[in-house]
Image 1 (cartoon, rainbow, N blue to C red):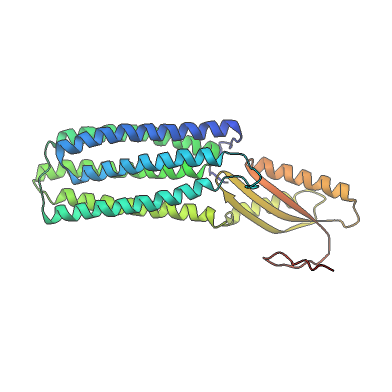
Image 2: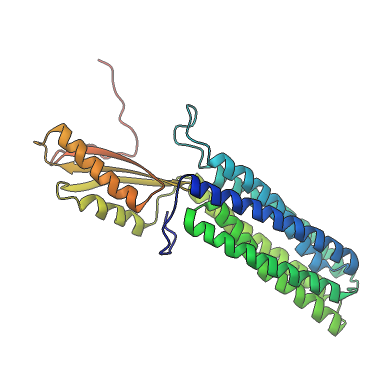
Length: 314
């Protein structure tokens, strides 16, 4: 899985440890922010601050789901799950997205109610102080999550990082609502900011849902990654050509299937050795990949179909 960074991916126990620590950190930060924002909302009555509190509650729920999903995704393949449990991560992200959208609808309903019956924000300074504290903690968490994503390629941690990154924009909006609403004595400004934040939350949730569906529907890797895989396979001096490349991603694991054309006169042992060498090169480029290689003799036409051929008993 491409990360767009020069930092090499790690895998195995070190990567698992980083993913676990990232989930623990996000749950801990969400819990602290919930307590602080709840106290500030009771003090101010601000809808914008309530929207931030709701978002932190969502963060806590999403982070708990992530914690469970990441632990499950790291479970080794077993008899019932030969391809591992990597899809637990995108499945968890899809569930988070649905939950987030539902909660955002409730927030929009509260904002509409306050637009109809506006109320002034009280003690805005206390709310601003809590939101500034929230921003500082979120910046620290996002920085750590981005580091974990660069090292492990985890989609669940990436989704969590995207959500917390959107919180930074949300919290800046809350500060603007508290300060401007209090300074301008314009009560409608607070629910307007709350409604805008609710729409932003829905937008972020849709992005997360698309990211998870990308993996759940076994979408191919990007074209540039597929071309890179072909180049690696065809760079071996004994490989004549490569075709029928199929790829997909499940959590931190990529799956690569490819056919290699080789001299039909070479021995099966040599063809096997070449396949092992190509597989080693692919694993070096994609450390978390499962690679399956089929060997074809050069010049032999074979059926091109997206479906397995039916074997008829004779």
